[in-house]
Image 1: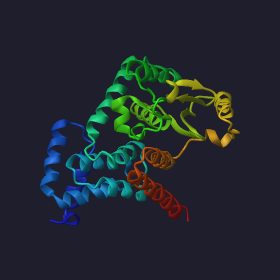
Image 2: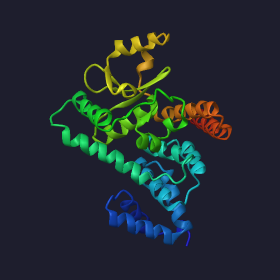
Image 3: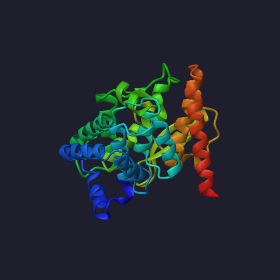
Amino acid sequence: METEKLSDARREALLGLLDDATPSVRKALLTHFNELGAPGLQFLQEVAHGSHRVLARHANRFLEELRFSDPVAEFRGFIRSLNYELETGAFLLSRTVSRDLDVAACCATLDKIANRCRDLITQPATIREQCRTINRVLFHEWGFHGNVEHYTDPLNSLIDQVLTRRKGIPISLSTVYLLVAERLGIELEPVGLPGHFIVGCFTEGKPFFIDPFDRGIFLDTDEVFALLRANKIVPKSSDLMPTPIREVLCRSCRNLVNHYRAAGDNEHAKLFASFVEEFDSAYEKHSA
């Protein structure tokens, strides 16, 4: 049976169940896709590279759990799709190093952190007040922190390792912060400064910023500019603009190129350099 021969009704039924988190439903779908074999793989890959970001995320999780996918090929496909979503991209990136990464366990950790924050937030609360709660949970209760001692350790850039070890570099800790905030319905944006990475809020009057590498310290515009000047960087207003998800993931790959080279792992350095080239190529084709 070929995937294209599935009836429209059957395809719609499968699509309607992909984002159902009920354990019994997920178990039944896993069994069903396993029985379908190649057609199931083809169907999931179509959805994973489709334009519906939420369904793409769930399709990727099924692919990962079923071990249908080649992690490197899947990440390349994700890059070429131009349908960038931070959580999916972060896990696909990590799976190129850790094929057996347990995405469900990682998501459960993020859910647990978000649920703890939700329990502590008293509504109505401003975004700043809600972020204070995230800071309390992430940095004080869970102990997430910047890995100052071993900054160039490649594991600092892999989302599963950051969640397990509770330490990372600015961009990976910002990613964790954003994924928790997303679960809480808080509108925050990644902000890729020259030489540093933070999180920004642009929906409450004056913008404010959060530095997850410095245990969630709040910064205003002048303080961010002062931080850049302290690092001998002449600040520009454009430095504070939200960073596209494509660039967040590409920047993570650039970091890994440098960090794997520093570790003497040229094989992985070349792999992530090829991902950077894929991002650049996909962007140039899209912009042409």
